[in-house]
Image (tube, rainbow, N blue to C red; front, side, top):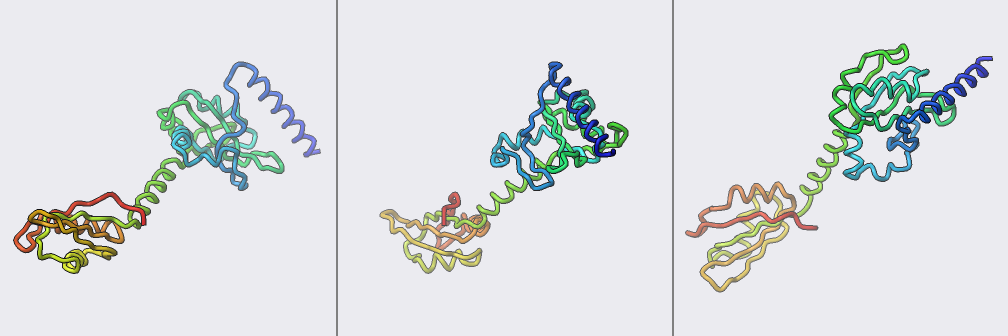
Length: 234
């Protein structure tokens, strides 16, 4: 009997949603780009790392503790006063199609999100909801941190000029070695009064430290010029 009642309620809810969509309101995107807790990844998940994906997430809020009887129409109406809603997605169990009590709401503008987050604790269909920003900021920060870490692990070159003619390759390596692991040091014999060279460090931070300490250093009566190159591929 309970199963029949649930089936009738789901059918009525589907009819209401169809009428709501046909009334001229924006249609909800059934392929909304988020990973569900069931482990199923939506079709466009492969594009999550693009700038467009991050920008969309910045316009999206996460809602927890959503009442089981609440549907997309209820969430749309609840958050419309915060700004124009362009998409609503209630996460459902893949087997039973019942709400898991979590949802995402996307706005046309990210400026609408603070007002939506401020509604956390208010009642939707008889239950207080929890509203939070999406994880976009954390994703962006993690991506930037990974990029910085990758750069730190790349060999970095220091261009050295105004070297005294008596300074050799071993001297150059010994001069820069206290600041990190020197993987390569070379001297170019120039025709003028001074030579130039290149020192390659294992990590970017090491090269920066060497430049900070040795640029302008008086070496054999000549002021050394040390300049950092962009990180190079290993």
